[in-house]
Image (cartoon, rainbow, N blue to C red; front, side, top):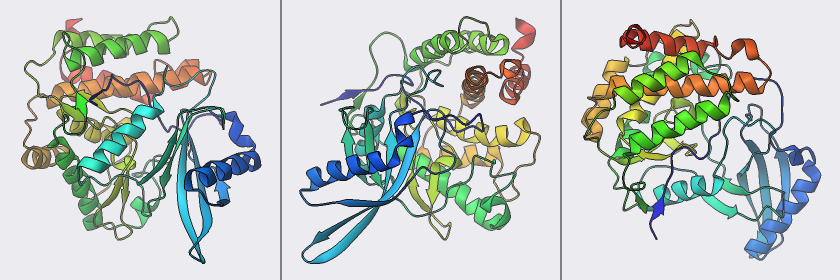
Length: 374
């Protein structure tokens, strides 16, 4: 059965904001443990116990992650497995209007089945909210190291303090290599078809982001975000290739092996979307620049330049980067609107128009001459 993926019907975003649980039910961890033990026991037809159930630090507004170990006996021997659960978010003022956890699961399942792209091992999807009050899925825990978002990896944390410049280059280039291999996959083989006839994938994405602006700003007007949408509509590339894009392609969504020499797993497929694959490499570079230029901090020494990154991606993927500059503005628009929504949703109204992401978006519009033409 072919699947149709719609632009950005779901999303997790990690930003340092006010402490707020998007799914309050996890406050009853003992009750959640008991329910998950029953869920696993029924699916595996054996008694399962759970230990170490915890919510890791850094769980964002749009998602709840649980870590735990399951234990069982088989053939007279004790067995255990470390697991990660992702729970459908519940929050009064979410970052995104909807979150399709089921589609996210199916993307990972398809990528894992039909390619050599490393993704977490999936252990089960629960679409009935009757058990925990929300939908959820379970993955096997993947050992390794993930660059930090909070604080950004170029400002603090293990990647800044515990790696050499040579190791950082290897990490960066291995991430780009995996992304390039992913972009060579046939989306039809993965089970996905291009979205509905008529509008192009880019037109549908822009329509989504216009709707997102109107929803996220709750009736107000985001000046620089609206200007970016206007420019993007007026300067759409033509004759674009179409693949299944990763969507949230950034180094902070990759688990690297303990020796940092390769990619152990690619995470967070919530924003997978049909479109021009250059948008993924543009987002990859832009997010790093947001942590550097956007926050007024230097990039980590050893990371290849953005130009070298694009060149590596072009050679490895076989795709052209001719529309790269357009998609950097596209990335800046997305990031600016998302962070502005977070500011509004967390009662930081003074930061809706003037947060660092919006100011960085303004710089990008100035670089392409967009503001002077409006």
